[in-house]
Image 1 (spheres, rainbow, N blue to C red):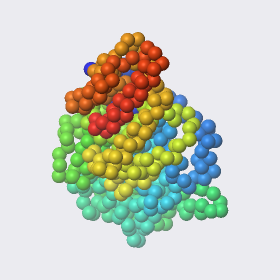
Image 2: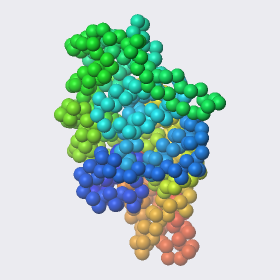
Image 3: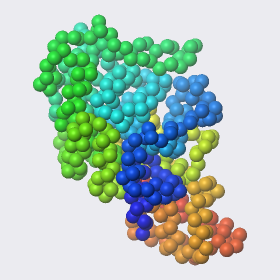
Image 4: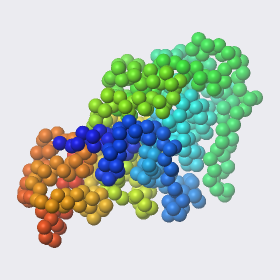
Length: 468
């Protein structure tokens, strides 16, 4: 049985980050839970990563920004190494909810700026997030607001900011959509400098007053000469917005929900939890940091261990942490972009404005094979720091370990991971074939390292390891 204090902290750090090494977990667990939550929701109190060395070894990050693979590899490196894990997790959350993809623009510098914005503002006020999103060239191009003119509106962004980014279907009318579109006329971007021969530059937001509809508009019962910021302000005061954002937060940080298209007809999995988060949203005037503090300290969060399927990037970053690699600047970061792609998730390129479908939809025969193969490949070499740490701890017992104790300890040190009785029984039967684990002689040590490596590979290949 795993230490409940360690198990709860591991749960928090899987959700608020991308897992931990055992050493990091024990250091966190030595502190009060609420103190750790407070540190996570205030990442600016912790120094950020120094990327200067990374850029020396990955020159594309400085000299050629038109390479999403390198930048996605850099993001994985940040997920694995940042001491401000919630900052990266919030960026991933908003990247999923406020989905904007590389495929349409094929302009990497602007997508890089988009992700940087999500990282910078992800724990801020939802009002600021929506305003910055509305001024973001990647989003403007993705949803055609550069084609939204005073004398000829394009409703695409006006519709999606209500339907998928803030309130959800059923909480506004078609007239509201048209008036939102009118309020965002003139919000566009300057033509980016061509990639060749000048280099790689992101575009910038510009407001064109001559192309803005400054006439009176009515939106959700409010009337005035609204611009985009006025619309966002009204959106953020709506109870429907509080519920919609709260349901997204629950789905991403607590437990798998039905997918967004069903939300207008299907009740939340835990209505009381959504009510609690919605109240925190409205009481704090849409402050996301405050909502996350309530979420992580709630009983419904603490009780939701292993009730979410890991998304591909969570699986990849978590396994790398377990293997103990890429803690410095190592080759291979670029390959992680391809690894998550074959599992169904390409960073900087969600499939649609709806983001990725989550939960069990991450899993099919093909993606499960990719997930298992990747996880097993990362821990196969028992000389890597992570497996060596587990082996060292087993050897430190200073006595032989029977099959059941061996399996329980490996599951504990690799998570702690909760498994079904049949999974544990299969692991125990395997461990029992070779008797007790011993480290007395060189020959016993070599055989024991091989046995621990085999158990570790089966652990990350288990059904239970797919859950966060």
